[in-house]
Length: 252
Ligand SMILES: N[C@@H](CCC(=O)N[C@@H](CS)C(=O)NCC(=O)O)C(=O)O
Image (tube, rainbow, N blue to C red; front, side):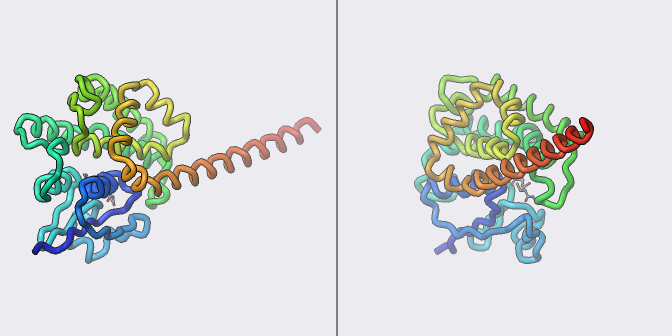
């Protein structure tokens, strides 16, 4: 018998969460191995043997190691018995279309979302400085990707990508990516997402179709969101107090 599947993840990582949710939803028996990116566990020699690219997620299934979240999702959907067909259809045309969204995602939606979030909020936790210029560039890519999502990928009869009536691994991957935007300042998040009504409805539908696992795996992110909100209000309060003091002095 094949050894139990090992899934190497950091739950703060969006593709990691997609793998965990997929396993939970489909009753795949697995061991979660935590690789804390903020503590640089991904650079350890042990993990480098599993993923020489030193990124999460990665899996080890018996002697078989695999990295890149989309390849992992496709492998899990194909290698484990009893996975519902809608996740990664056996029909060659439907499967090809899903691969097309997944390939597009890396250099468009993910590129824009990751670089925006890292350069506005998450960078310091990963040892990188915030960079407003890079954030502005990333925002352009993100907005253009959201338009494509709204006008092309979500154009169809069903509620999910490619007009499907049930979610696929592409819905899971892309919605996990967009949920990372929860850590942003509320007004930035609203500015970016609120014009895209279909996208907002699809995020809601995908969460509903994958809950309670979706929320369970995102709890860490929801906690981080609260922490960043508190930090922002502390900074705003200090700035108001300082400017009141300066204002007060100038009146004297
Ligand atoms: N294309 C890869 C992206 C993997 C990736 O960028 N993972 C990030 C976390 S979301 C990571 O491990 N970053 C660590 C680093 O780059 O040092 C996938 O889909 O699995």
